[in-house]
Image 1: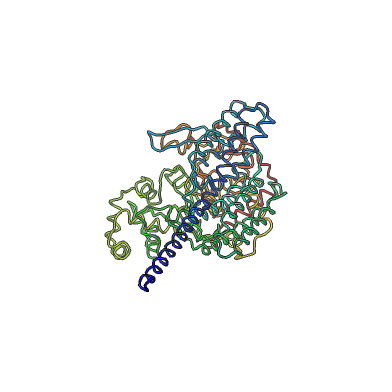
Image 2: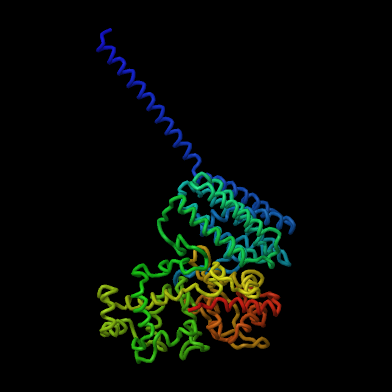
Length: 601
């Protein structure tokens, strides 16, 4: 064989061998890719979640077919435990179904507009808990509720796909679960009768431990994963063998929740995660009680240009300018005095129906006014401008007054590129109000470890607030208003049965019908928004009508069971009517805590 032919045969063999090798490598890569697809984090979680959904269906099915209180209780506890195992996934991935299944046993009213109002009776685990453990057994209600829950779980199972999960989804759900436990899970919010919140928090953390095991390979820093495991084990230990009323919630949040937020931020860095957007909480929030925790833009108009010192300074001047009112006698500061935490110390301002609420932390909610009728701070200002007892003018005049002020005109030219409109005027004032979220109270500085000055009585007061006194089931930490964690979208309204006068013998409900005036929905009579209680030491008198002048009177009202406890019979009262049973010392400790929420500035 000549050398030319030999050379080409060898060349062909080499090419064949190389092609064969490449095909093997390619097949191996495809195989590896297929194996990777088979064990993605999302699918691992989906497998666990689906199994739990099926198991929960089985227990609720058994519950719906039971006839005795013993079996009702048995299958309720089993199904509820599985529901809590699923909670981190369902609450994140399927928030509306989670809200449906975990809803309080209170009539739900949805008011989209005057032509679309829905009155819904809840069918949830909380309904089961309250009916199964009630003095008289409502068998039909229990069976129907259990059957509806089972059907809803079946529907969720059929429509669950978690393969879309990316690293940032996993980290978001991890953080949400941690915060949910600290803000509602340990307060009795969704276990009002049995108060098995600590046991349920244990179930949640055990579930999180499993999810973290699924994600173990994602940690570049293996010590970080170990730190997570150790921290969850320590958290579980802190939750075990402690009675509901004796649990130290202050140290739980300080030493566990905040440590887990720190681990979360370190994991974000370790995994090189970039979040696609920011919701109510900043993605790098260092703690629950920090000025860097919340994202105020989440609650503001899409046109909002954002926070800056220049905008805030302009807004502050407009806020204090009486020239914006028709007769030059009133500014925003007339009813919202800085030294009184932006209230006015009056029962009701002249000509007004209700007490002036604080503007501190007001921006961290979706709705405004006691009846929730405005959807933004900018929108709320419109009502003030047009109100006959306040500015008594209109938006066109407001704009003209500002335009004709040379000082304002120069500043608007600089900040809003020459646009003096009614919106930019309102936006500047709103931005000033958004700057009033200081998170620098004595309590904030202590729970974040910057100070160590809280007294035992103050800490006991916080633990009562978050536990036995049930305050935190309506006033959610850290803002202590009615905006429900962890989505922070819905601002709750409550029917407390507030009396017209400070009278516990012949009490009559206050005549103000609250939310009812907005859509004339009968089931919304006497409903009012749950406001923040931060700076409450400075904001007397209290309640929407200013009926109580001291914190002692407020605590006494709640301790008696609200309106029901002083003889006001309102069918839809959302506050549990049973007395709290707080001792005199416990009531004093609650007030000690409340006073630690006063901002330093």
